[in-house]
Image 1 (tube, one colour):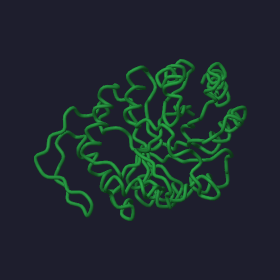
Image 2 (tube, one colour; image 1 turned 30 degrees about the vertical axis):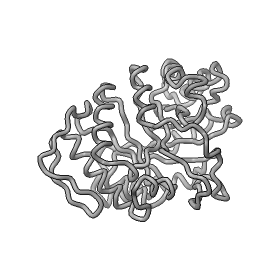
Image 3 (cartoon, helix red, strand yellow; image 1 turned 60 degrees about the vertical axis):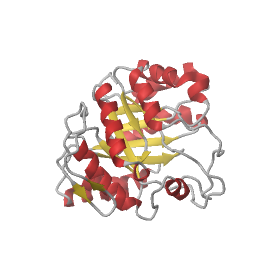
Image 4 (cartoon, helix red, strand yellow; image 1 turned 45 degrees about the horizontal axis):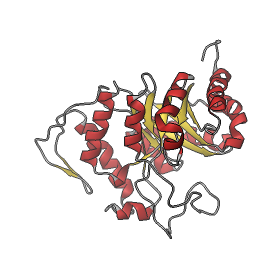
Length: 299
């Protein structure tokens, strides 16, 4: 199982510690991938419930620095050499699809084919509406955007006319991504809609857990995902199951244990948070987690 590291681009750490310093440390310690989060703006007094707290309250201050995800990913790609660079997750339906196709293709080309596009439909209605997109139709827009992104990554997209997106004929997108089919698209989310979208349209599923692992829930979701893929006739196609564990620094000592449990469930990759306040400890922890999932004496 591969081990990814979440690089905090939504805090003061990118400047206090250095975004690229964290990326190079993680890569040097053996991380397989580096991931960044995504929001373009916040809003005071929002009505949207945050999905990872019991009361729906957003757990960070509205004025927390949030460095744009693809900009942060570009910095990480430029200062590393082997790690894949991904978004976990980019809120797809609040982006302009043609601009995003260009940005992601360029990122993949310049990184030598190391970019992974993790996507979500979003939960913060105020943010999406402020950016000019309807929250109520975000699912349909997401499905159309996945189709259009893949068309654009060919360099010569066929025209497209959906309910949310229209792409005219005779467009040219160069450079194309380094990866032949474009960056892998991982669909994030824990709902059945997210599982169905991953099975029908994605190259993988990106699951989320907060603090503790609910192995029963994860096993049930993996089974449902397999059923969706089988019904779609895609069960034998390449597909990755990735899980991101939102863990506080106090949970860091348990990450090796969590990694073993995730591997036993059948996930292909685990993305972990590190205690960045202590860089030596963060570096050491990557090695401990890799060792925990090693099966033949190597990570």
